[in-house]
Length: 540
Image (cartoon, rainbow, N blue to C red; front, side, top):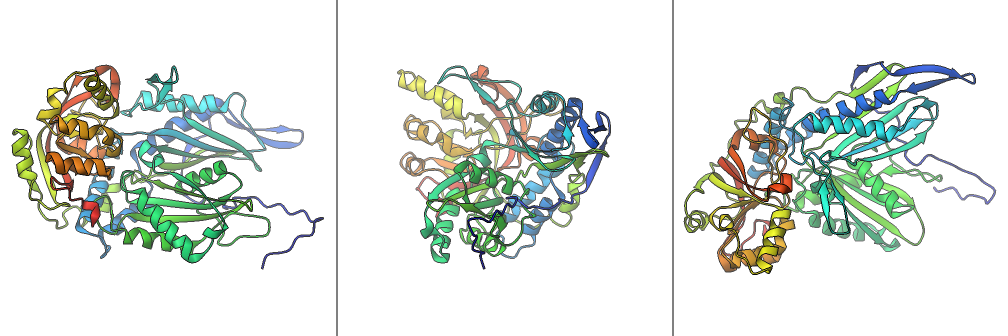
């Protein structure tokens, strides 16, 4: 029962009472960490060199390795009787991807993300210098010296942007907390996950079991598959402001709120509702969206966080962490620098899984004329898995915008857009020993506005990407005899290692990772999402 407070009462509670996390930590050393006495108190002194070293190591580890607990959750899909064959194929691919990435050459995802750091500096911690600058130097070193993609853009004018070529700036949030240790959460979040974050401003009427279930069913369906499920999905209800709500969403998808209590309190603490977390997983299963291409494995695990609120509004934030679940915690104490130990041997999760039974894919030779490629796809039911071999053109946001401008100015569409399937992707850096860097698909819906005009000119008649797309693309496929295929989002290292034979830049070289490329693939797995009759896999 809620306590009725007298106006003379003062009650303060910390909002996020998460307790202590208990992962296994690696000890990285004690250099540049010291304890000094100041006014009779022991103060932890953390040098900027320690912060730089920790950020460098954390961002490298999180780009190539996953948490053991998360791999266990993925593995569970392979034995789940409710999982579809497509679910199991996608998850096997993700486990294989984790094995390849663990060699620390090809990162887990081609979008190596915006570096995001949450820091919690104890009041008895002294860190001379600029902590954010020291952490940024570590991020800079990690991206400069590894095969990670540089994705950050800086505006020069309202409309003109250039790549920073450093993957900076990062998002670094540091707050003061009681204690004598410095805690961190490092994560790498790409556009796929962040673009699937939504904020809704509702009213008290939402706080009803029936209304809330209908609301969540609608919004969870709307998240779609463009962010690379299976998802870790978070719902946060309440918050003293919109930004407080969305911050809690980010923390929840990263696991930092897992230790919250199960109920609220008169002082306004945050809590988890585990029953409704189960309801969210059920709602996700009933969408039948699955792990990208149909099934029950849409949501791997869920978090529902309830926060205090102003009486006039109910903020609801919904966000996901994709299947490249790249988070790692760290801490600096009087005993030195510690980083969460991530899984070093993901291969053990493939035992009995790698050779599981699946329906053989339909082989498609994409070096033939476009009419013959389309004929080989026509008649296959949506959801069918194919294996593509031959030449593809890689083109995404910037390339499509430039080609659209060319057409608007009276020019013709490039021949390569007519002759070959188009793959929506932007690779990570190329290692010396491989033909390509990590090279998974990007979210296809960003190219939707260009497709009807391109198809009308005989271009983009076979497209490969990830996620659902709008009605205009589906209608264009029906009108012009086109196809949209989905590759496995989140399997970027696997695609580079097993399915790409060669790569060369053929247009817009100044666009960096968004340049137009020609690649040769062998047995690249893809699923038919839209066919030439207007059918959609997601109608199921």
